[in-house]
Image 1 (cartoon, rainbow, N blue to C red):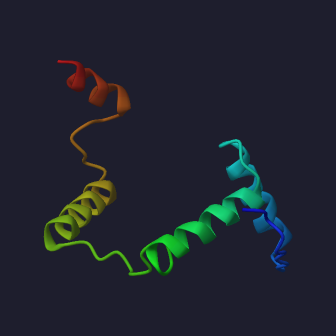
Image 2 (cartoon, rainbow, N blue to C red; image 1 turned 180 degrees about the vertical axis):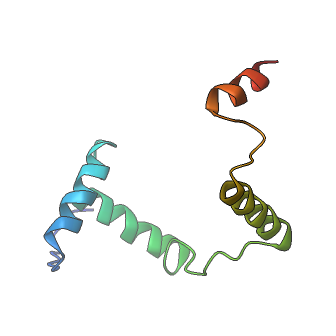
Length: 90
C-alpha cells in the first residue's frame, strides 16, 4: 500500500532527539517507529501498551521495604560487590 498521507506533530526537540537516538540503535527512523506504533494500535484496537500504574503485590512491597532498610542500616550481607561475586561463584 502506498504511503500518501502525511502527519505533522509538534514535539519537544530534546524528546525528539532522544527517541531518534533510541530508534537509530534498532536501525529505524522516527517515522518508521511511529508507523509501527500506528499499525500496532490498529491491530490491537487501541493503545499498544498498558497504561495502568504498576502496583506491586504484598510480597514485592515487603522485599522492597527490606532492601531499603538494609541500605539505610549499612549492614548488608556483603561489604561490597566483590564479596557478592565471590559468593555467587561458589
